Length: 67
Image 1: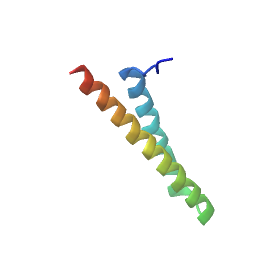
Image 2: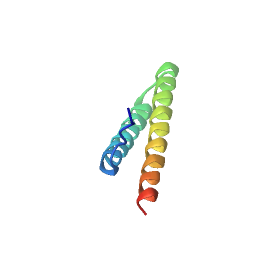
Image 3: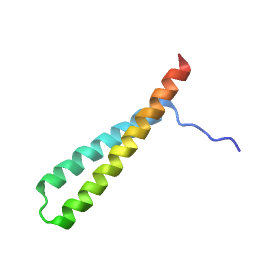
Image 4: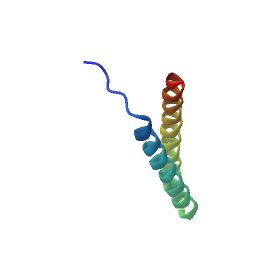
């Protein structure tokens, strides 16, 4: 079965969500205290940054393929 690729609009929506998640996680990290909280926040921020990078690359491939 062929893979169904998301539309550009869907990717843009997911990028917006990832950016908002990063903003919220950064705010939470700034307000937290304790090594365990900081480590957990850093892990979650890194995961969201990776997701954002992947989505932006996918968006760029879609845009390039339509040109």
